[in-house]
Length: 414
Image (cartoon, rainbow, N blue to C red; front, side, top):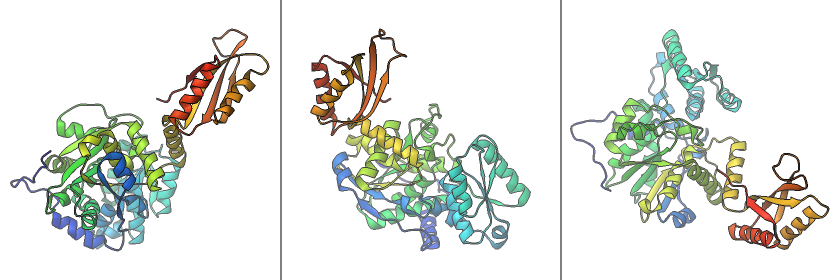
């Protein structure tokens, strides 16, 4: 695919010079995270895959870059009055952390249903957290009222040239470390990160394709660019990029600079989170795994290319992470729940368990169901949760059970 060139007649609100100045401004105050090749993921996808570990920032997300670049450009009056934002995610923590570090008061407005851990973390970084409304839109509206009332400076999570320039410093570092990258695969929420990265890529000495990634459930930027009307709703693993309305500035920049947008399924996002933990031993949130999810979704599209992607955040709930890992084990056949029909008589469960033993399969849980079943009174259903080596091992177990005349089925995941 031919890469887009910057239109000569339409100067964009952020230039490569803005990004370079942002890099000088924030140097030493954010982590210069490593960009490392993943040999295993490269073999798996057919591309040469470089990962930018932004989950290693102090607040575990790239959002610090834009927040700090914005804070450092405030005059003394604005600093003394303080800043405000509406966010329940990484922007809140990045802004709070650097504002406190610089002695700038910060207020973060969050919806009332924000998880307690996010409230606690943001307060831990020194912010005054206000809970208002049941939705983000309500929290946002309240933050703008407080801005007007108290003279705070509102810091937008993505639709601000200072934010975009700061986020672009991630790509600046990537291309300094690995100049041979020819494709950037970048998650899109509001569009701040990909806008900044695209500015850097288009200023490189060779063509670099820019591919954005959105969750299928929230194709907001895709809709804006392609003039489609797909719904933006659902419970996505990638809540960090679950944005219903992209920014006006970022939409303009994405339309001018980004070559393509890929939509990825929840299953691919789960697989990517799991692979990054298993292979790279690194924890990423759903949004942070989106780049790898795109490579897994469309391997032929990226085969043979030198791809750079940003692991943009690592803030994932530990219980959610555990669920993702267990679901991945189930899909790979290493964890399974088998539903077996038995006769309700002595030794029935023992005889089934003996087949598991003979096949070298570990039984984790056994669920007996005698009453709530459509079977006759002398029949019962047993669900056995078990651990196998791989899909072939599981298939051998199921074959052995059926040869012993058991009616067996696998309880599948969605």
